[in-house]
Length: 145
Image (cartoon, rainbow, N blue to C red; front, side, top):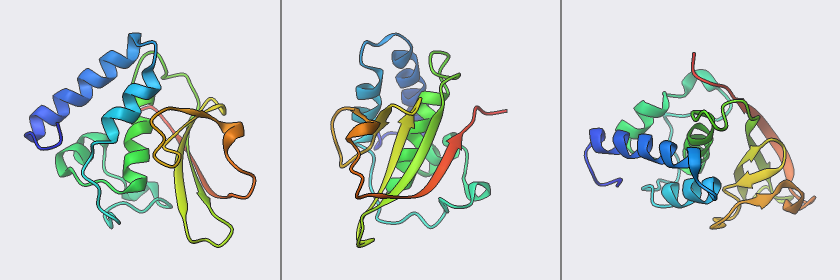
């Protein structure tokens, strides 16, 4: 999917969101879809601490460059931009390990379900996140205007 043209990537993202509407495993669909994104270590176009620096999800798909935060952001948009979950609370929570040697950008739905934790192929409960991680940033994802 990610090696296709920009129009095909946009169409594939629309199809993903359509599948999420009726799937018994919507979060696993999203995790699987974004696990194939071409990863770059750091996307300097997006500052996680400054939402005004964020391109739209459509611009991100056209650019087709994803770091850990961008993947979390697109997972969050993939949830929030559906009828099924548009009223859900969707957050990106950035956690550090105690030594600050590792960061996790987790997508949290309704303060319960978590995506993007340690490349897990499935969602986990927020209670599964170790207390040894320190919350550094919390971003509430809103619907587009």
